Image (cartoon, rainbow, N blue to C red):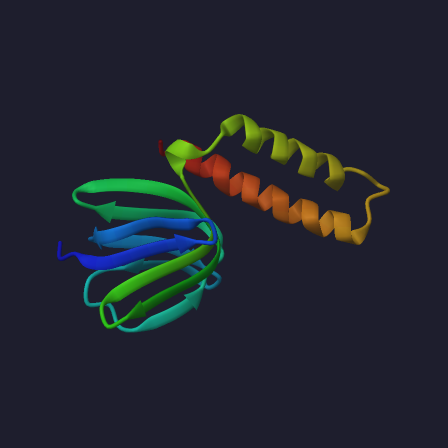
Length: 134
């Protein structure tokens, strides 16, 4: 496959800067796959699994929020959170999942607490699904 320039940058810093053959990410409209010579494109990211194929290797990550941009053949992914599957702490994810679940089953929880717990639960589920791709 023909490679393209890919840069992945989060608020914490540069995650990836190099050539890739394929990028698959979840936008708010669904999954998209980016290959070389893709048309210019901009989309807001949702919460889901990201797949980067580069140099014959395939890596999976949890990708949450942010933007995807394709311009003049160069792809820039600017997620709020991006965690490679082999760096995700499964125990931490489980604790976050349990805390969110506890709030969601609390009859005294406020609407704001429930909304935050739902978001936390969704992030935990994305991370749990990605861990299996180590």
